[in-house]
Image (cartoon, rainbow, N blue to C red; front, side, top):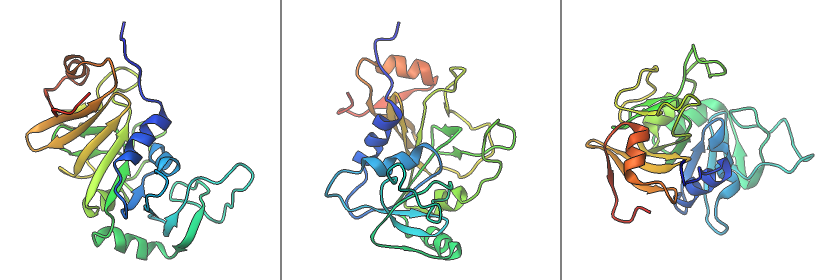
Length: 219
């Protein structure tokens, strides 16, 4: 029996938030990545962007305080910090395509060891049936991070040698933040940045099915 515990969704969101640098302009994708907004460290200025045309989002609104005229790209109600703004989505996409987003955090079905991204599908139940703004983000942001469970519900690794889902971008993912480990995608393959306590590198490699190099500082 495994003697390690997976990160909860909130723990994973906090782990991602930990690495976002002060002053960064960040786009949080639909789904799990939106939780990152609730875990940004106090005193760290991070400007959150949404592709439907918002800059300067705050954490999720308290229950009962939602304003459904103020929503993110996933149609979730959001808050706006002092100095925040909303504008036409064409201007928002110009920010993305023009290289003005420092980090985007996206969900994924699969990521290859060298950073290819597949995060949409027409055949997966409940999947977003079109690529949406993810292609613009994946290629336009200065860094693309993925936040996801490491394994599917069937136990297959979402980190693969080669993606079988439609590709969103080639060699664009720099980091994979998962419920079991944080991995870097490099031209030479995967590198382990950290992993949950009790999970050995050998077990992580067995779960993923690919060789993984390890940072000297990895847990």
